[in-house]
Structure formats: C-alpha cells, structure tokens
Image (cartoon, rainbow, N blue to C red; front, side):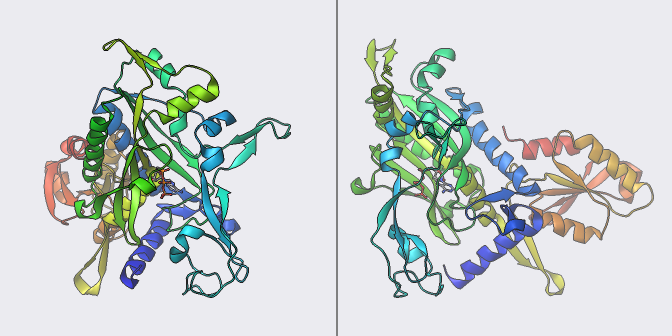
Length: 446
Ligand code: ATP
C-alpha cells in the first residue's frame, strides 16, 4: 500500500471509531482479532446495505424466494459440500518471530519482529506449509463425545441447497428461480486483515439461481452483468470496479466458470463478490450423501434432471467497507480547515437528515422538534440544537447525512425551511410540510 493510501485507510478507520461506524470487538479486554462491532451509524448503514440487496434481489424481480436457514447444520452437509475435506488454507509458522501466516500470502504479511519486512524477506525460520481447515468446530448438546461435532457454517449457500425442494414445493416455484439469503458465516482465517475486509465472523448476501442444464451459460452471463449494475447502482465509482475471471487452474472444485467482482480499496483490488456457475455439483453431492433424490421434474420439457446452480455470493461487510472507502472525502475549506465528508448514497446513508433550529430561541427549537417528531417514525433523522449551525452541518457531513433542514426566522413567518445539501453545500427552501415527501423520494430503497 502506498503511503498516501495507507494514510487514507488510517483516516477511514479512525473516523469509523470516532463517529461510531465500527469498533474493535471486545475492545476493553484488548480486542479479539478478526471480529468487529458496528456502532450506531455502522449498524444503520449495514441495515441499509442489506435492505438494498434484498430489495434488488427479491422486490425488483419476481423469481426469487427468501430463506433464513440456521447457522448450525447436520455435519454431513459439510462432508457433502467438500468443506470437511477441502476447505483449507496452507499455513506456515515462523520459529523465529512465532508468527503464523498463510503460505500463499507471505508477500502481503508482516514479520512480527520486523514489521517493515515480509516473513519471506526477514530471514525468519519458516516451517513447511501445512493444511489448516478454516471451519470453526463446536459440539451439539451436553455430551461432547466426538459424535456431536458440528460446525459454524462457513458459507450460507449450503442452507439454500438442502432446502431447494422445500422452497420449490412450498412456494410452488418452477425452474428457473432463485433463493436469496442473508446471514452470518464464520471462517477461522489464518490472517484476518485490512480492517473489516477479512474477518472471522461476517455476513454474506447470497442468491442461488436454479436453472435447466444447457441454459446455465446464458444465465451466468445475465447474473454477471446484473451484479455489476448493482454495484454501480449502490453508488460505487464505476472506475473502481472490475471483473476478474478465474482461469482453468484457479477454479474451485465445484465451479464450471467463475468471475469475481473486485473493488479498488486503498489496499488494492480485492474481491467483493463471486459469481459462479456451480453446475449440478451441490445437488449431486447432497443426493449422494443424504440418500434423498434431489432431481426436479420439469413440467415444461417433461424431463427429470438435477438443476444447475448459478450463484452470486456477496460479502455484506466488504460491501460496507467499499462504500466507506468510496465515500470518504476531504475538502479544503475557508480558514485552512479541512471538511471531511462521507459521500454515501442517500438511500444508504445511516441518518437521512438532521433537523436543526437555527438558534435556541424565538420558538425555533419547538418548531424544529415538532418537525423531527413527525418524521422520526418514518425516517432515521436526528435533532440537534447545540453548537453553531456550521459545526452542526459539518458533524453531519462526516456521518454521511445527505440533508439538513433548518428552522429559521423565515420558517416562523412563512413555514418554509432551509434544505442544506451535504455534497455541494448548497441551500434551498422548501415548505416544511414537503420534507417527508422530499426524503421519501430521495432515500426510499425500493
Ligand atoms: P477470499 O478469496 O477473499 O477469501 P472467497 O473467494 O473465499 O474470498 P467466497 O467463498 O466466494 O469468498 O465468499 C463469498 C463472499 O463472502 C466473498 O466475495 C466476500 O465478499 C465474503 N467473504 C468471504 N470470506 C470473508 C471474510 N473472511 N471476511 C469478510 N467477508 C468474506
């Protein structure tokens, strides 16, 4: 990472803590590596990211059903999926600094004794690489006799595959159709890094689309382009998004074709989402391991077959981090000051508007409070009356709040308020009774 980009990342991390987007998990106990907590602004932003994805998948179209599967599943699921045998990363230990590193990412890691060097450069004594399974194991019930072992799911997708027939039958769906799910996944990453980019507990937003064999390539192309549209629509800079295709030697065991969508983070191009043509691998394996037929009878073609799956698997936390990185901006202002502004899309912004009285007298606080009370059950808005109006605007710029409505002497005379826009800092007046309509139009997700 260049020094500039490193500084930028440090500023984003520090803003996240200061303004309540993201905190280190268990911070008062010294923290726990690879786990983070979302604060008041972060939790709202995360809800909006999930809502945006959910709406994109399940409201905009009419061929996708919802699912919320449990995190703990039968341990045979993970044998069938290949995770028990193959969900491993190569790991090396350094006998000199006692660090533990991913053998395939040594050039991105730092020696614990000489942080300016990588473990490959520092001359440390590295062990041979060995395989490390990334699944967290625990046991079900009070007796831990080995037969009760279960795993925290490392991906949400398997919950969808094992429910394919339940969903198809209960929702009376015919192929092609998809199943969407948002939920936590857990991976015991060897080197969690880059803030919330690679963590041990994270949330996935996955959609698995079930299609007739021979139509999969066409569906793969459809989803590939749809998912890029989604990232542009959510507000990410188009220049900072790209596809990366997995070459024949890089494909996962289940994939016939795979593209990642990557974003240019301050620490480089990194994956946001994987789009995979999984063939019929998953349903074949679950049929084999469960002994329950997984084939589907197609009324249209009168054929029985195993559906082919095209998946779009996105990380919620990674999307959120990309939004924070994309939104962060600094501007030189009068008096040598720097205005920090988070240019989040109004639909995603954690707080939609600040409602302010210009001064604490002449009935303005009461009027502003009444406007706030009227809005707050429909929109995430905030009321603030202390500090100069300029300072209040700047505080909201840093939080990514796209609009502020100020009650001033004109409001008391004609009922209009000032709307102050975060990005251009421009101001206009609208009637107070039009604020709800204004906010609804600008910030409604679906
Ligand atoms: P990576 O190569 O970065 O480890 P992956 O290819 O293993 O990712 P998938 O298994 O395809 O990832 O998971 C789908 C999505 O889930 C990823 O694109 C990413 O957004 C998210 N994801 C995966 N692992 C993590 C993690 N450790 N922390 C945060 N998000 C993750």
